[in-house]
Image 1: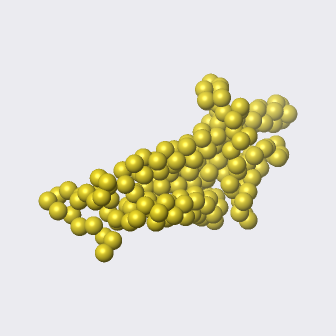
Image 2: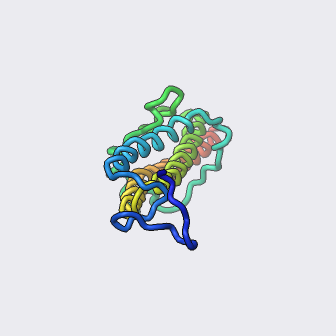
Image 3: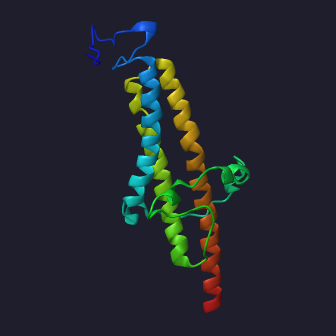
Length: 178
């Protein structure tokens, strides 16, 4: 049986000091990780594109400060793929396509959706901890951070910039009415 049992309140240790719920051969662990981790990322991306936009309608505030200047986001964000555009119904966020207020609001909603998707994917990357040794868990944790935190930062950076554009757009509309 692959399921490990608990003895005296501690998880038993297998070969090579591994402490896990499922004890599997290393090759199986590697193959399983190579299948499950991309499935988590792509499954979250696909699933989140199917969720109602109303779930992600948050307020977009224009905060003071440089937005992405702290992490130099503008320098490296072009190297990160936009996963939402890989699925039918996804909202591409690589560039701003319109200044129309409805589009800007939809873009802002999609930044909330993208951020929630990456937080969820990062949390779900703990699933392979069930069959990985401690050092495999450390590698997966590093992968989860490396694959998701930059995307979360980009979504926040885009929302900050959208807040500025939306505030400027409202000011122009207000001055045109006056």
